[in-house]
Image: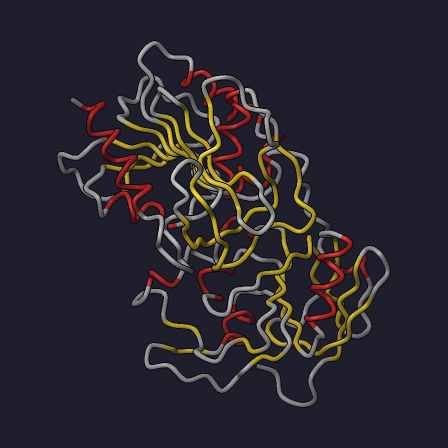
Length: 367
């Protein structure tokens, strides 16, 4: 951290509103899509989640950093990728004096080492109310004396370049060579905990570029991962998944978050951008037909348009806060997907059985 007086800065939104604060982390300008999360904990998992690429994250909980940051080499479960993915972080109060037996550095020091700007002292309640009423918008964190032109360009969510920058370039085997089913992951920016969930269930996992045909890989199942941005721009991935759905003997397909939206588009449905998204660890969902309720971790800015799916598909889960579609499945084929994160990380694991169900389908196909 830098000595002396804190560097003053502002968060400037595209509608002209400004929020004053002081810099912690790297003292550099930042730009991105401004989004908020209402989670109380789990900032290391959230900040390293590739789904947040291109975004500046606002934490609504008033304190951030109280338990510090662990050593990635000793506590890999606290990190969802190899680096911080957000472009910036906005908090009400940063706690530099952390307290946790596994922590080795503060949140601010970690941000600085990753070259990521943080802004504290912001009225995050008022900021969140503005984003909730006016919708997600672009913004800039500008240290005193900096202009918008000094910040990196705003992310381009209209192309597949952002997803391509987060995915593997060629197929990569992960884990051991056991006798479990071979499951491919179309890597659109996959969280590590999703890979771990499959490995813990005995799967052999193959990470695959999101536009690479999978027909000759001998897969027993295919999972389309989470990732950032607008699913509709991932045309090659959508076409790939659509072709797998149309196969004579289709392999089981599963989707999580962005992967759920891609599956809906591949099936012939449509998606739309939510006003301010679902980003928290306490989103209640209800299973259609059974009335069973689960609490889920979510991080998505797009949703499936109600009634857009063709015959043979059904709504599986629905959000109890706003009624949006949170899960879909095919009535007769082994295709299912959810908008929420069954692996949690951070958040509840009420829906971990989603992986059990998918792996069972892959095992049946392997026979």
